[in-house]
Amino acid sequence: MAHDEQEYEIRKKAIFDGMSKRGQERILRMGYDKWNPFQEPKDPRERMFSQVSLNAGTLLREFLQVHPQSGHSEVIQKELFELCVGLLRGEPRARILLEFCNWYGKRVPAKE
Image (tube, rainbow, N blue to C red; front, side, top):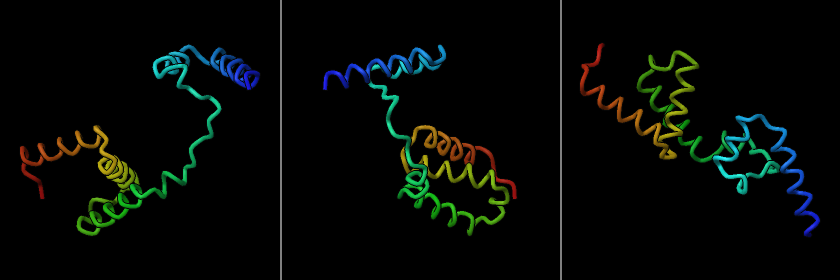
């Protein structure tokens, strides 16, 4: 087992040494000991079909039914979906965007 760990460390160091300076800095910020260059990539289906994504899709469909003029663009729908996912996950970025929209809505009267 010690041989496997030693081989693992040699391969890990070789990958690290082959990275760009910027990539190495990113790994060092996160912690070289925590970094696992051999972990399996995440399955994109998990992201698409997670409970949060399904709930975000439901919220977006409800919003677009009430505000059909809001969803003309695929880009807008994608951004709204990402905002919904962020809000459901409690991401600070999404919360701040929501706070800004609420503040702006109170400050500036809506144009019809």
